[in-house]
Amino acid sequence: MPPKKKAIKNAYFYFMEQYRDDRNRKYPNDPISMKDAASLCSPLWQNMSPEEKKVYEDVAKKEKLKMKGMEVKFTTTGLQVSEVEREERERVENCNRMKEEIKNTVQGLSLTGLLEKKFYFIHVNYFCECDGQDFIPAEIGVSRFSLEEGVSECYHSIVAPGNLPIGYTYLAQKHSEETHGIPIPPSDIGESDFAKIFEDLYRFVNEGSANDEILTLYTLNEFQPCVMNFLQKLTNVAGHEGQVFKVYDFVQLFFELRNKSASFSGGEGFPVYSISETEIETDIFAYIKEICCYWHEGSEAPQYCSQSRVKRWGFHIADHCCRDLNVTLLPGRHLPSTDKYWNDKPLEEFQMISTRKKKVVADDAKATGCTSTSAGTSDVKPLRQPKSMGIAVSQLMAKEDGPPEFNDWQFPPIGKRIGAKFSRPS
Ligand SMILES: [Zn+2]
Image 1 (cartoon, helix red, strand yellow):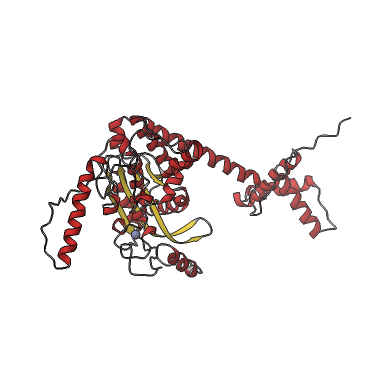
Image 2 (cartoon, protein in one colour):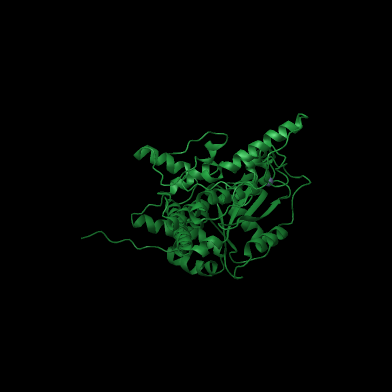
């Protein structure tokens, strides 16, 4: 005969069992049975709050799984392993959905659509991270970018988040000193009105969108928790119930834009996602002060400025994509207007370089008090053509197939180009 199958008990059963045991311990001379307990417990159970009942529901759930041979495992933080696994599965699914959406957005564009499509990049600096998920914001920067116009406008604000949570002063001070350098609160700089920040940001990003659309902002994965946390705070303060913003992976967008641009010229795209990641990590425009906010312009750490970050992400895309699309580059919008980023010329513009060199010589002469008839100078800066192939791609190709062969004159990577001599293939 097979062993009798044990009945699965519900939450109410465990409550009754506990009631009976408690009572029998209290009055050992007048014990009651489970049947007695049932009649006594029914009115009590009906008056219990959902929280009180939950204790017994959890016991029942756990016992049920145990009987089915699915012992509940807990992680060191007390979360059920199955819960963690479910969250991880959800995360992967969301990530795949996001990738698919970015891909479809870019792939579906015509050439004109690709040139005109506006993207918004966001970065948030913070003072400290509390309990692993709450960030105390310090600065926000958002840029509007299209391939045709480059970084056309920015929204920026230093944030005054109110007092720091108790016990976090040291961490905030340390994080500030090591990164953005913004004085920790309370200080007299920054916008403290979160509703105003929300309103300004919403107006900036919503331009041209249908009103009920969820607005997409792009950032690097490492900044996503902080950005999402701050946007949620802003949304809450503004009293919005639904989702207003979504935050997507900037690198994925870069990857798709590069490949889409290459498809129009027949050029080389990025073979894999990690190449776009490596390209962004080179961060060649990090120390340009002119792209910083008013506060970071005079700071020792311009590379941490939120405004600078969102601008240079746009420059990176422009630098990799515009050449394939024959876009005329605009100083300060597609690349920093700083001279050194514009002084590499294709062959036909060599003449203009020498003209400028003559001007420098002439200016030096003036400075030393010598007069000299200056050569005819031009204020027009010859614009460097953007490179279509990245540092990482070149390295990859060099590693696998020997030096890459270019069918067009390629410029050395920007990072290696400053002041560097380069030779032209014959
Ligand atoms: Zn800044």
